[in-house]
Length: 290
Length: 329
Image (cartoon, rainbow over all chains, first blue to last red; front, side):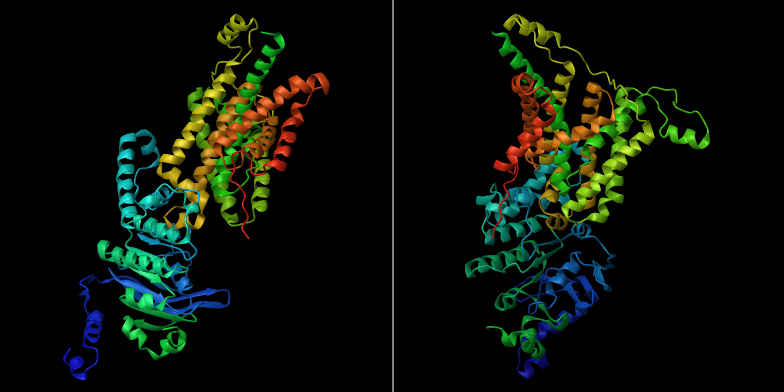
């Protein structure tokens, strides 16, 4: 600490970074507690035929933090998110989750483990109402079996009511009460994105994965979405890993940033660190409209 | 009331009853088509197979007895016991669930994401395979199926209509039972889809595979569930048809009648299957009675349904209740 102050650089940042590397948990400037590592990617390599989409990348996600993955188009960001959520199985490397190595899994099993996600191109149940969509987010939390539901009406009913309450809470939180009963197919793009977030949130996930949550939105919608992401993290303490193109947004939102380029990791650290990383500037920020 | 009008009403009623049976088969198609996009050509054969199995179990027939006798030179045919209808139905349902599992495990698991036409071809193969297995297991002779459903003319309706109109309507008790069962089945299926966890998951899979995976739904499990449900519907249809006209291999041809039913009702709508079935049932009976028999030399029931379906394809290709096909550029 004294060294940092003596050098006259950025004391706050330096201090935080050094603490981060060592301690199990620390408190951010705005008072949120960031816990120990909840997920760790170790030397992940993903190939499609001869193309290496991800080359030997390692990084970790800590409990309660907002972790961003950024990079130019085709850098492999979405592929990385798909590896985390089980849609892609990497050829090499290990995924560690809650202190244990995760065996290769189907996406639905990953979801059952408490990792919820949204999609870049929105994957909602278009034929269902907003409420029904959000309720599907509760599927992983529902325990009653098929037989119990048909025979033991009371228990299943109680469960339905409990789940419904949580779904309504999420709907209130994301301010989509007005469209609860509207079929999703009729909603505009920005609202669809929010409904998708609601569905993921309804699962009360350990980690929430957001694939370009602000892609294609106007400034106002982006501001709304940023606010919701921060609120979710703040209110529920949800760990969030997100991919985003909009550099300004990422820098404001996230605690730590991974930068990818052509499938390689070229930077990892606080927004401040990343911003000053020469390789990152060359690959990405140099050409951004900052 | 003039005789002709009374006749017409009776034909109409009988058409409704026949329509219920078409609807039962169509229902099985809709279930699978909605959840997996597979048009299951084998649905009719599944009804036949279920009926064969039910009769076989009830009569204590030895499965594959012809095969066993041919290979081992033995003469086994019957276990010598009779299983009560209720238990036999339960056992048949178990067989249908095993069948559903096998179909998913050995056929469609390897065809995920293939073109619809390939899935369709697979179900044609499945239909012939199942027909062969049914033959090999239970023999090909016509069997009577009696699970204790009331049959014959409904005396009460006969007397009531006779007093009211001077002409006693002939309505078969079995048809009435079939209608009630079909109604219960549809209500049950709709409740299941709307209010249970698995039903919700089923609708999710029907809507979007990727999104369903992301909320923790196993596609494999849902597809086995859907094939089991279709097996259950096939069993109900098999019981009704079998009780009405005996369990025979022509039963699998009813499946073809379900096709125009689906074109009318829409491939994705459960109510559509019911309404479509009723329209076809009533339509072909009335057409035969009013136009076919007097003017066209009869036997119009064989082609009327298909003609009606063709007309529908021209004017409303998605059917009465189907999802409208909108192509955005």
